[in-house]
Each structure stands twice: as structure tokens, then as C-alpha cells.
Length: 602
Ligand SMILES: [Cu+2]
Image (cartoon, rainbow, N blue to C red; front, side):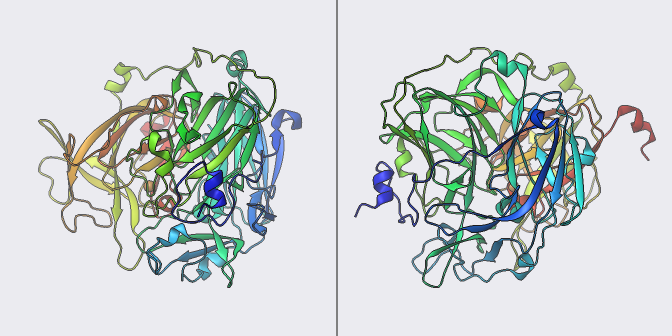
């Protein structure tokens, strides 16, 4: 039997029948809130509201900035400060049912995360008691610490918060979202996310599109919904995990607040500002026409913190975006006949571990075991208009400088091990173990990193968010951070404040003895060099060579990044951007320091 979704999915093979029809709702474009039109002074009300995720779904209760999902897109100018009064008017309870299903699969062996409803789980009353504490973080913002949205500095409903954003930073697509300690996964899932675009003269010199119809922001998220007692979708948001998978990977892909929307496009060049705003899901996006990959239509011009030095093609397998990563894309539809349809499809199974999947096989990407029952993301349909393609500039950013090797040679180096620990009767706990080099005669649990003849010995000095702060980077000085992944999944690691640059991905192999992972201590031996069973490329994609604030650290690898904090002193955070990891407990503080204050640190 051919379902409507298969027919509309251009031959896409799906193991489950989609309970919602894809590509029937028009892609919404969030309302623009242009700071210059309001003298840089904005008020955003954080409200409980109703939102319809699909025309065949009842309305859903949500929490949204200005009561919408996504919130309004704030547009700012480089160098022109923006003040936002974030007015918390939330009314509880949390509009999301939180549950842990009792089993990973249902009676038909279908992983429960592929299915709507609670799958036998009971709603968590503690989540149901959440009444709407909030704190807003501008992701990618070069923001003074007081206004960065420290995860514990909350404002309850009725309590005011006025944040100042200097906007002394490159043009880029940022996003603002909730960051409350321990419950970011619920608050963002409930709808608390919006886009923030910084614009500057360089982009205007290049003639890049600004605003509708040719500049289109795409905030991609996954969501799940409850069922009524007759098995019909209710629209109530469900955050469901299971005993095997502690992250929520929801079956329905939502773009700008609609499930599987469709966008009518003119035969011209579009600028798509794409961001993955999902809790946990990584996307590998492929553009298909008549079942064939047409990635060559797409050129990437920018990444997390704005323009790349030169345009780059997408990776052959497709554009990988983990949670919070962004891409600025130019897509050429100019040669297409009216009525042509192109589908943006996701080929990344979940949890994502970096494994490749060829774009040529994209139609077979659906996978129940891979928690990807419905790979379709959205559809573009060409409408009759005169054709107008635009040439793509060959030189983009003129201010991009790679980190100077001589400064890196003397740079302080910090090592962080990403570690997953099983906890009896509870979800696994993920932490970032900050490592300190120890003497050769040190006794006790150690992480050794062997690079050829050289062995570096470390002990863990911090693991949990509330452990002592150990990172005090000096303003103006380059640092090199090594992120050592000792888990089986890819983690998108986000550092607040200034952007950073990718230096290297080193393949590693490692051993952790039984009981080697304790609450703080860890015993592991890490050897640089490829494991024979490791099939990952560990390459740096061209689009990872720009200014990044979130970087994927794949299994069996060490990622090295060069950071330099430039402007603001204070207490900031770095964390995994898989929200279920961040909340449990893959987040750590660091304090940026003016050099003149360092001698006075006790
Ligand atoms: Cu993680």
C-alpha cells in the first residue's frame, strides 16, 4: 500500500506510517523584531500560549517568547547595543509531559521513542510541578557575564530582567533560549527558543539577502505528542526517554514551529539560515529531487559566528548540524521548472556517533533502530516566476585570521575528558572531567594520554557543575583546549562568550578498566592513533574551519580548539549542547580574568 506520505515523499521508504501528512503546512517565518526600529530597546514577554504544530493536530499548550514558537527573530546591527526586557509572564504548569517509558521497545519491537504517546510511562509529577522559572541565554553572543544567562540566576514569573547586549561582534545567526539549571531540556522543548540575527556592512557589501522572501531562517527541532485513549494525537508535548536512551529523540521534525512544512520558492537564489535547535538530535541534511541528491545546489558561506573566508561545498554525505550548530547557505533554485519539489531530508540516526551515510542512499535513511522513523524535514516547491540566479562571491570574510602558531606554541593547554557513568536505577550521568597534569610518582586514579613516546599523566580535578572552578583564562591570551571523548556518542561542545577555532581532530583508542569511572576520579589509558575497528574519518569538514561556538566531538577522538577571550571578565559556562547531557551534568563553569587581576587571586 502506498501511503500519502510515501507518495509525497518521492519514494521515501518509511517503516512506520506517518500519522501526520508531510508538506501541507506552509513554512512559518517568525515575526521580525528589528532593534533599530525600536531604538535598540525591546520588550519580550515570556508567555504561556497555544500553538498549532500541524494542521491536523489540536493546538498545543506551549511556553514561548512573545507566546510564539519560535519566538520573534531579533535583528540587530553590529556595534549597536540592544537592551531587552525579558518579562517573565509564564503560567505553570510546564506544558510538557515528562516520562521515562518502562521499556526501550514496545510489544512489536518498535523503539518507543519512534512512537507518539507515553508508551506505558507515567508522567513525572516533579516536571509537572514546574511553574516557570526562566533565564535567557543569547547563544553566540559576546555578552557581559551579568547578562549571559547564568543557569542559576533565575527570574520567577513576575520578576523583571533587563539584559544589555553590546553587539560588538560579527554578523551571524545567533539564537536565544532558556538555560535554567537542570531543566533546560524541558524549557526549550516547551518552546523557549528564538533566533537573533546580527547584521554588518561586510554582508551588505557582498549583496547578501536580508529578510523575506530570499533570506529564510530555518530552526529545526524534533517534537513528540501525546495520544488520547483512542490513540489519536492530542497535541500535548511529550518529552519521552527510555531505560536505554536517556536523550529524547522525538519522531516529528518541526521547522519554525511546523511539522514537515513546505516553502514555495521562486526560481532564484535563496539564503537559508539553518540552525539545529533540537534537544539532542543531530541532522545530516541532504537535498533531494526525484530521489536524487542535489547537494551541489547548495553552497555554504557561513557557520556559527558568521562568514567563512571563502564559500565551501557541503560535505559529500550532507550537512551535519548537531544541536546549536548553524549554517548560512545559498541554494540555487533558478534552473527549476515551476512545480519542481525538493525535499530536505535527514540521514543521521540517533544517538549520533559520527557514522557516515551516503547521500546517494538518502531514500533508505529511515530507521527504527536509529530512532529516525521519518527522515523528511521540509519541502521546497518552485512557483512560476521569472528566473533570477545570483553569482556567489568568491571572497567572503576579510577579517578571518587563523590562530598564529607562535601564540599557540606558548598557550596554556587544558584537557577535558567527556565521560559517561552508569548509575544504578537512574539515567546515565555524563560529565566533563577537567584534568590536571600530575607528577610521575603520583599514586591514585589517572588518565594517561600516550602520544608516541610522550606520556602525559592527569588526574581529574572537577567533574560536576558545582565542583570547584579550575579554568581561569586570561583575557587576550590564546588557549588550547583538548576535548577527549571517552564515550560512544558525538557531543556538541559549546563554549559561551568568544568563538573559537578548530585546530585538530585526532583519532584515539582508549581503555577504561572495570569500575574505572567513579564520581570524580577516572582511570583510563588513551593512545593517539586509530583503533582498527574505528570507521570514522575524523576529518575536519571545510565548514568547521570558520569561527565556531559549538563543535562536534565524535567517539574515539580528541578535538583541539584554540580559544581567546577578548572583552568581558566574569563567570561563564561551557557544556555539551545535548540538553539532556547538559542537564545531567555535562556543564562546567570558567572565569575569564583581566591579566592585571591575576596576581591578586588567592
Ligand atoms: Cu553530550
